[in-house]
Image 1 (spheres, rainbow, N blue to C red):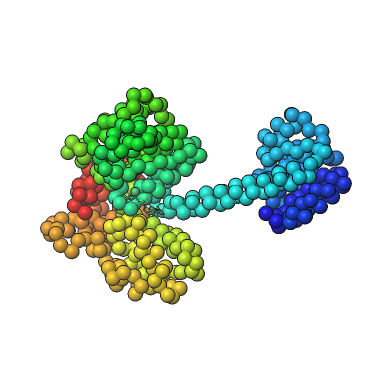
Image 2 (image 1 turned 180 degrees about the horizontal axis):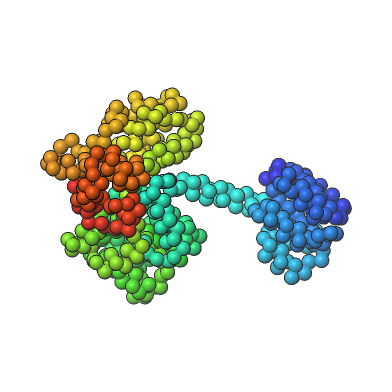
Length: 473
Ligand SMILES: Nc1ncnc2c1ncn2[C@@H]1O[C@H](COP(=O)(O)OP(=O)(O)OP(=O)(O)O)[C@@H](O)[C@H]1O
Ligand SMILES: [Mg+2]
């Protein structure tokens, strides 16, 4: 693309001028240096888009110059030029990341083609890197609170292992985000992350979706199709809503996990697959096992590393960070100046129970960014159920349908949790705030199924007490 800067490093003035003429004619901006040393000195100040580097230079030679360029500008495109090129130096240059190798005497037409091609390639690579960065920014996991920090630690440890992970948590708590993060931090990150939503695929299609089919396997099988397991080969398969899979499909998935091979529907050939499976469910799978709706053997295969994401109301200490993150995100997305939030509005948002968890919070912040005219968001801008209730914690309770005892239990549980989070799970301090004895609080927590520390919940997949509550929430 014209206007791009090209640096020629060559000590033969005649060659430099010939190349300069042809490149400038094509609209490039040309800079030159007669030695590796002088080029490196200026590299920081004036970074070119591409370098043409002679291999045979006085002082440090081209290969050494290339190695040093890599230290300062690892992504800079470099084409090597030489009249004395040998296979060995070509190999060395390629290892050091040179894009190509052109021999002297130069064909200026060929050189021009190579330059255009290299500029295009480096621009694409840059764009790709930027997009990846944007995507990973978009998928950042926010949460400085204890429970989220301990989950992040778990992800860090689990990711590089090849172990299966089972993520549980209510809707909108970030199960998919966590699954993607595990894949991104694993050594499979350059391969595919394939997602299957087991709840969204009709029963008669799920096997073909997972294992593929051969042409003619059933009425609509016009062509051979590869299934998700095959597509995820070398990468990660995310079985979302795994609790919604039928028992028949569960049996087939179990076999694939045990044997590491699939058979397409209507096929007779076993195809080996190397797939890491991450599963997620917002159902309590242990309850599903008791009800004979989920296979216990499959559960244990999937549940090698359990990650249980607590609902947002149990980690309200993360709410301010999440709000600031989404404000920043949506303001830049909608091209608006960064908005702030008043202390009262923040308090209201912190004490709301967020039944839709982080998804609901994200949507609310997006709405606020679009709808609020002023720079500061105040309580009046909030949805009715969020405004004017600062200090209350009844927001999570349904307005009817619970008997008094269940309603009282839910309120007590939520209120205690809120104060535990506030005190960093310090039971003594929390008991002080609540005006009860420490031992009494311990007893209450046990009775209401509240773990004794914020962290322990992450080890408590399908924890009985919690899920008993979940059923009635
Ligand atoms: N800790 C977090 N930090 C930042 N964003 C988050 C976090 N957790 C969740 N989100 C965002 O909230 C939204 C919901 O998350 P996600 O889709 O991963 O939830 P889920 O548990 O898979 O929900 P469902 O069960 O409904 O499928 C997404 O936009 C996600 O990016
Ligand atoms: Mg999901």
